[in-house]
Image 1: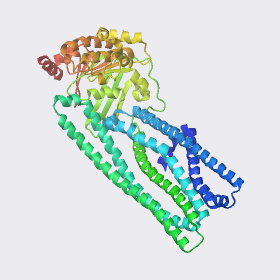
Image 2: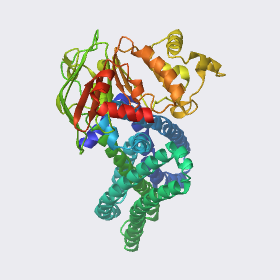
Image 3: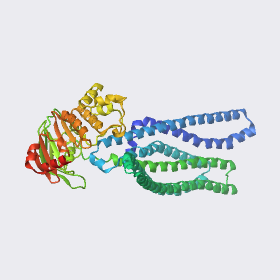
Image 4: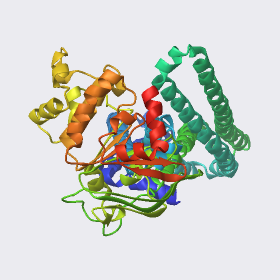
Length: 581
């Protein structure tokens, strides 16, 4: 019931449109119920009287009734237009609201959430699943209301016309309802299985398309096709089970609909044979009502199918919406202001979910404006320290302080606004160079974007492109070289102008010449900022104010480049190795 209430909340912002849809649907149902009654009156009362008397007033009444029926069906057509157009528009608006909510909520979730779920599955929940929910939001209440009113109205009218046949049909109803409810549970489980397999297929396609260049490089196209076929076959199996339960449901429903016709024929025939006051005209009227009665039953069948599909999608939608972030702002969190740039790791401990301890009792202080380099083997926790500083994850022990304040006492938005990060794998959004640089500060002017590009030493290259700053970079910046992408990321940070800077393996994927050129941009960017540098190429960290050597055991060495070389320890070994490379 709570799920239904949460579903109903999305109706509230569009309640006027919903009531218009339902009101028109009600009028359509009223016309459908009234037509057999009017037909019964014409056949049993009016036509015989006209036939006997030929009275002018009765002919006029007949003309008026025909005009009324014609007008009613014109209005019915208008109502159906409103139902089909505005009703669908209502469903789309509900879908858009849900998509807004799920996308906004996803933006609040931490890195740990993205560590566990694939992008394709998220896309499925924000697209395919929501379309089914949209159909349910529009057609569900409408089908349920029209069907209920039509069935109820038909039964009431049939009881007035001939209660004995109506009673016989009513006795059949519990069996029909029992069948529908039983089939409902089978359809619910199979519908959810279909949703899950569609999500798996979307995830597989997204992964394969993103990795298409790698697949071609290894000539593994056939392997990718086999992987897809495996998921596609699982989808076919799930869909097969769903259609099997749906076929049972639909064929069973059609059987009961036919059974109602049989009951009317049987009961009506018995009454006629026994001459129990049941005329052939009444029989014709009843057959019209059976038609009006069985049509809603088909709509009920359609409703249950939509309900199962829609609620399966809504359940998956709620699974994401109910996922709570484990990184939240404290109640009295403050804005980061006038950052000086002092950073302190105080007895910090951390491990990833289900993994080993990555950081254990780490203590480290970086004074404002200083450059600190973190070096050491992979898996030592260097990148983790940077992610903890930006609160992509929260420390499990100890605390991280910026300007002597625990970063958990700051708002996340203001903390991250004051920290800039450049990583080895630069992400550029599909769009223009201008848009990607401006991402550093969305309210920046075109002139400020150009100045940032000049400072990052990328302006001249941009101006050589035919479309200059309007040049499309392609998906993930595929149309640009690695050096160009790095410089654009540097320009983005010049525009952001953060007081704290993180360079995480920012040049490790570049050739030596390009690295040398971009290093000058990094040096300019780091000037006057508290900077954390993570690098495997130790030539890039020689000028750091302090170098920390860290591995799985924690901080092993610390000091300047010359001091660590003089110690002839791990750093000196690493340095000599990189020189040989």
